[in-house]
Image (cartoon, rainbow, N blue to C red; front, side, top):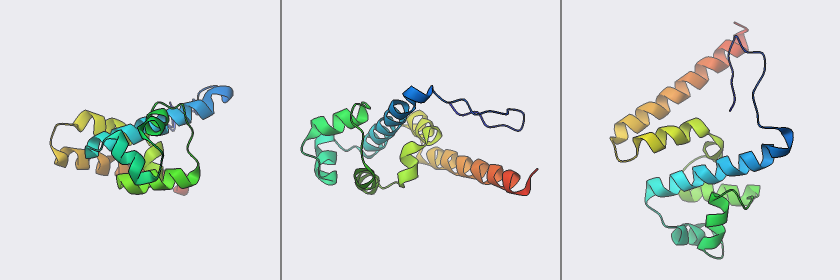
Length: 128
């Protein structure tokens, strides 16, 4: 988990040796969340991104198979999201909590997240 605050002086990350597998897990979980949000099967997604079969998608979603940058681009395109959205845990949590609910609330949450990021960027760039 990343903790960024005016009052915190460090960023909390998994241990160095576990960072890569942690990121693979986040990317895989986000791919699964977006796939389920769209109602797409693993077989369909495998076909959309040019993977051999659903087991390859399952391995990616489980964090057991790393994707290269070209594959990540194909996943993002197939799922209709930006590549950076596949690294964004907060976005994934909003989608998971809103599943089965009102799409307007999902969009509100995503807009709020974007506004918070913009505000944090402004504070940082102005040295406040």
